[in-house]
Image 1 (cartoon, helix red, strand yellow):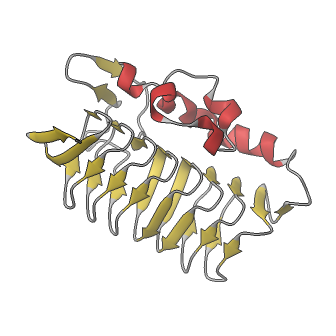
Image 2 (cartoon, one colour; image 1 turned 180 degrees about the vertical axis):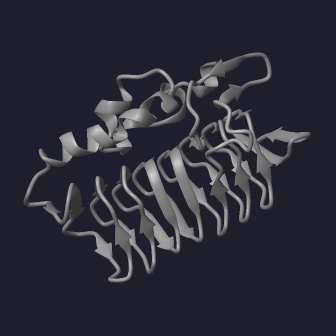
Length: 221
């Protein structure tokens, strides 16, 4: 499925994880390797830019981290990022330059590209969010199926078995997710796509689309 390939979803120049993503074809293939990559990369970061705090936690000196935020390693918090009040970073997280992790937002095993915003009551787990992707208030990634079976990425004409039990969503660059939406396990959303508020999304959504509901997905003009 071409729509799901890393090269068609992301500008890799907008993430510190470029070298990791370049090794794979599909973004979900990256998920099992985020932890080891963070530790390897963190130990090589410029000490003039990043400061190591705690066990395998590297935070850019220009980042703003509120005193009530919790960050568990391994994690890298990029330059000029903002980690707001009561944010909960459970570990295995890369937060890009200029990204915002907001009030009561929870992250786990994720890559947030530069300028990503997850600013209000979001859960993002086992997911990758592309450059300038934005999740509206209360929108979440659901990363485990209710029957606990392995996640399958489902396109219109093709399916890919991922072999993963935990897989949230892959958001391309400039994706806008409306408030209180749920991105079901195995969701892949192409670049420049808008998701209406209160949506329940699953499967592969083409780039440059407007998702109104599962039966009404229109191309942007």
